[in-house]
Image 1 (tube, rainbow, N blue to C red):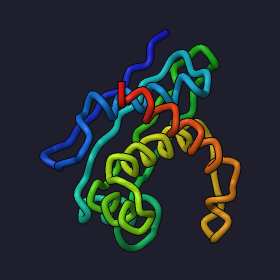
Image 2: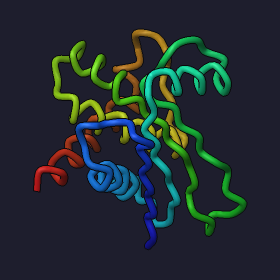
Image 3: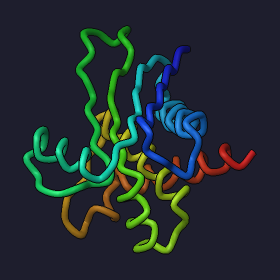
Image 4: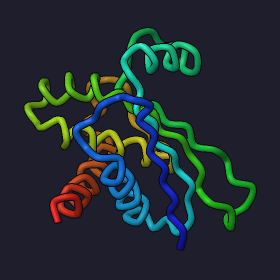
Length: 149
C-alpha cells in the first residue's frame, strides 16, 4: 500500500502543519479503501485560488477548495489528484460555521479527496444534505480523532 501525499504551502500560513494535512488526506483515502495514491495538496492565497477558479472552472472569485482527479489507465494505477485549498477562505467558512479553523481546513482536505475519488454534490442549498457531505463528515470525525492523538 502506497498513499503518497505531498503538501506545499508556498509561504501561505495555515493552522495545521503540512504533516497533519497529509495525514488527514491519507485517513480519507484509507476510509475509502484506496491502497495506491499520489495526491498533492497545495495551499494558496485568496488571489491565487480566485485565478485558478476563473481559469479552470470559469467561476469568479475565491473559493475554498478546488480538486482535480486524473483518470487512471487501469485499476492497478494509483489514484492521482491535486487539491488546492485557500486557508484564508477556510477562516471565513469557519467563522460562518462556528467551528475552529483547524476543523474547517481538515474538512476541506477530506472534501478535496472525495472529489478526486469521484464524489460530487449539488451547488445549491442541498449541498450539506448530499451523500458526499454525509460521508465527508464521517471521515472528518475519524480524521480529527487521528490528528488529536
